[in-house]
Amino acid sequence: MSEVSSKSVDLVVTSPPYPMIEMWDEVFSLQDKTIGKALNANDGPAAFELMHRQLDSVWAEVDRVLKPSSIVCVNIGDATRTIRDNFALYSNHSRIISFFLKQGFTVMPVILWRKQTNAPNKFMGSGMYPPGAYVTLEHEYILIFRKGGKREFKASEKPNRRESAYFWEERNNWFSDVWMDLKGATQKLFDKNTRNRSGAFPFILPFRLIHMFSVRGDTVLDPFAGLGTTTFAAMSAQRNSIGYEIDENLRESIQSKVDTIVDFSNEHIRARLERHREFVEERIAAEKPLKHTNLHYGFPVITKQEKDLVFHPLLSAEQVRDDTFEVRYGAEEQRTETDTPEPATKKPAGKKKKPSPPKPDSEKGHKQMTLLD
Image (cartoon, rainbow, N blue to C red; front, side, top):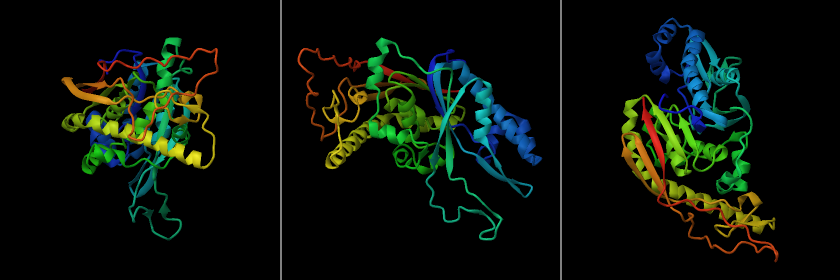
């Protein structure tokens, strides 16, 4: 990733090829011929370690380009595989944790997300006879690492941080260590066959992580871009992004979806606002408190930290040169048809009203890059 300057990236959200999952054997073997030899020799542990050494070289570059106090989020699943009639688990998540610990990163609490499956024959082994059946892996890990200490914000950066807030009810869901609801959104971006071929994760996964661990205008890196899901999520979230992908066959799929990201993202923003409106109605019906008012939308919110929260609609997305795209955002906040903006609760007489943070210029775009290596 020589094109990326050292200490220039604010957040990494990625999902690498999973070592010891057969669909990725060829990808790893093309990078290192000894991996193919280990697999042909039925030496599972050796192949596992060699595959992870390929990932280690990428993680080392991630370390180089990250700013101090930045966050890395790695979506990874463990692998199960039978070699020479021996069924075994290959713990990808623990191997990656081991590398980042050696690099001096702080390991943060992980998130488990439950994969949606309706397969009637998902269980492995000898049916109902103990002890021959095996536990089925139906979850993946989101590993979270921090480079150095907690991020600090200058006084001039705090208005943007406040506008980048999320809703109280979103916080309660997103910061749970188990996610059970990741489905639905990606279908509108890519068809099922394309998603399966690339191993793409759901759009909502990087979308949440980007909002959880970065602020508007930050730079998000995905060194295993795949279909560009992280880049599209960054576009939607008003962040800059850089993506690397070695599979040239995915270029057309990525570029073909740039024209759809504006409507897709704005629909997603409207849905977030609508869900909050429904949350407010339910809370009022339950006679629970709503102590604050959002300054941009006029609707009630739970906490003071949500008062400046605002979403800006996407106006356009266009290719400005090879593999580089620019998105423009509106200066006015995104609204739903049911939004009825009202003045915020008046402050006591004698105190000056705090001015709202400046809104972004509608003519200013954030560059979203997919660099194919």
